[in-house]
Image 1 (cartoon, rainbow, N blue to C red):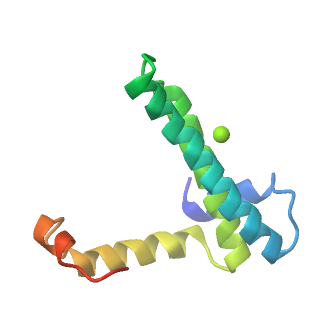
Image 2: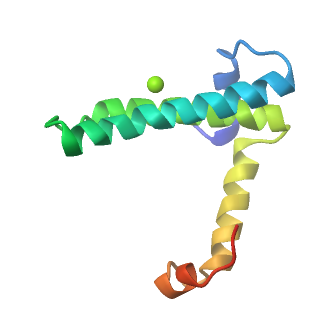
Length: 108
Ligand SMILES: [Mg+2]
């Protein structure tokens, strides 16, 4: 499945109709789901749980769904966001990650 197909299929289960609502629902939801993901790690580090990788995968999928929702709200695509991110990182780290470039980089 590619990004375009995913974004279309994810919208099948969206209950928002207007872009402004999709933007708000998307941003609120992805932060909530990211919280659910980090809670799994918290339980692993500090509460004696096994690292539940299946549950973590599930939460990452939920994060992705809300990112797709946010993209629709912004009038863009997951593919465009992914490409923009890779382009940014290629400029920032043309030879791959370098700690010195990370420490001395300007924001963004
Ligand atoms: Mg979830």
